[in-house]
Image (tube, one colour):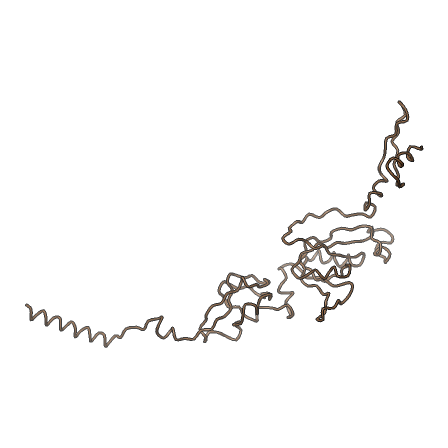
Length: 282
């Protein structure tokens, strides 16, 4: 039996050698041909990014891509090269960022790309003290204040009514600032009445255009994250000071057991005791 066993072992060895020659081993994917393809790091979206989003570094990642697949539109620079740009269209996670689908602040289409769908961009002239509007920047949220005369009055809308308004009210609450045209490239003030571009609805844009014709507009900066949308009642000029409010106050004067009067205090100055004495005729 032993010669037969040796003969079988020799036959199997010959068969194994033949199979090895006819069917060579496949190359290792990690160390073979695929590993030799050169790659290039490109910027990709770390998470899904909606259209109109201003990019920051937390939204961007780097991934190696095979060099033959990297086209001219891919971005291979630093993350800071695209920070602050706005997306013209949406990106899915890990999709390469394309230069043609981004807009910089000084490029055509930046404002249109940064608008919330359904809203409009409108530029308004605001009434502000020198330097006050210099603190505004794109991305801030403001309440738009409308100051005017009593609408419907004979002199409403004329120059005198604009100079001395009698009503102040919040016309548009929580508007997003898109751009502030206050400074030139040399950082000098362009005008004393700057133009501020805000994001509003179409009906609000119509109101703002009408408001500019009959009054003046100013901005009130909101705190970051303030979502308060309740609009306070209009402030009236005749309610501005306590002296004006006092004209409706009354005091009860007792002159005897059966002589009790309620008389107005009036607008006269002086202490409360002096005003009561004047009102009671003493």
